[in-house]
Structure formats: structure tokens, C-alpha cells
Length: 175
Image (cartoon, rainbow, N blue to C red):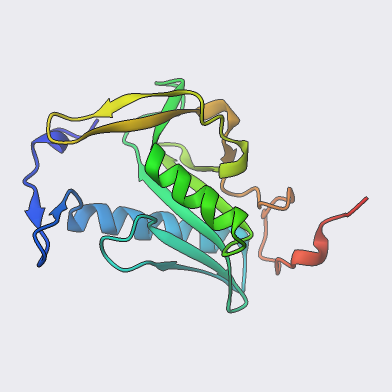
């Protein structure tokens, strides 16, 4: 864990809402977004939702929103812990975006020392919950097994982005 992470100062939004996000958090989320853009090829753009949105980012393919994405920046190896936490409310927001048709998929991304990994929200076992967080913010979280997450070079359609190539939705098989 980054030294002093939980000692950082909370700020307040214009309406009095507490904000537990720093400029460094936003930069880290942007770095994850750029890694996704590079790995998944031309036509992929990762954009931020406005501040105080429940979900961090969304992914567009050729100008169309396809995925909603929540991302976490971890300063340890993928082998250091068996799970990474996803806030239950963020899981629910991603899940609802998918079942309501707002997004094709909800993605949870986590950056580790070795690189970025992802998992489809529909593949997360939401029964694996507990209370987690810091002394400033405790909330229900889901333990997401790191071993279930895919390297970011693997696209959501199952193909691998080892070289620049366009990603088309119709690459999937329906059989």
C-alpha cells in the first residue's frame, strides 16, 4: 500500500458531499484508461464520468458507449493478495447499467505492478461481501478473486490485443 494513503485529507464538494478522491486518484484512473486504449486497439476511447459519479469511466468503440468501467490502482503485485475489493454500490451500479441496456458490459479494472487486469461484472460473485475500507470510510465491499481477472491485453470478446487491430462487436460467435 502507498504510504499515507489512508491519512489523506478529505475534501468537500460544493453541496457539502464528502469527496474521498484526490487528483492522484484521477490521474491513476486516467492511466488505466490509456492502458486499455493501447491494448484494445484503434477506435477505443476511455472517457471519465463527471466528478461524484458512482462509476469512474466508460469505454467507447468507434464513438459508441459499450462498457462502463470502475478502476482501482494497487501498488502491490497480483500475487500479494488473493482478492481485490470492489465497493458493493459500484458493483450494483455496473450491474444495473448492463441489465438496463445502458452498457453492453460493466468492467472492473485493477492495476497491479505487473499491469492492468479486468473482470466482467457479470462474472463477479456478489455474495462474497464484507465490510472494508479505512477509518474514514467503511462500506460493504466484494472480494473479487485476482485469479479470475484477465490481463488487459485480453479483450472482452475473448481475443487478445497483441498488436493494433480494430475491435468489432460482430467478431463474437453466436453458436
